Amino acid sequence: MNDFSTINEGVSLMLTGMFTVFMFLCLLIFVINISSIFFNQVSTDEGKADLNLINKPPSDHKKIINHIKKRISE
Image (cartoon, rainbow, N blue to C red; front, side, top):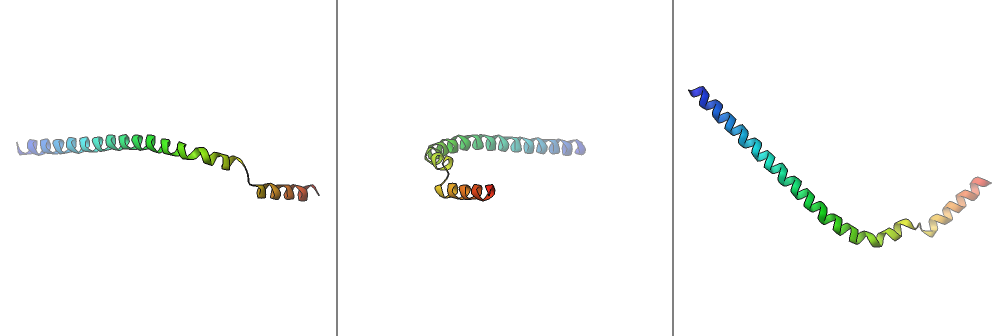
C-alpha cells in the first residue's frame, strides 16, 4: 500500500504542477493580448504625424541622388 500512496502523491503533484503552468500561460497570453491592444492604440495616435516625415525624403538626399546620377551618366 505504501507504493500506491507514493504513486498517488506523485500523480497529484504532477497534475497540480501542470495546472499551475497552464494557468500561468493562459494569464500570460491574456496580458500580452491586452498590452498589444493598448500599444497599438498608442502607436497609431503617435504615428500619424510621423508618416509625413517618413514618406518625404529630405532635400539633401535629393541633391546627393542627383549628383550621383550625373556622375554615373558621364
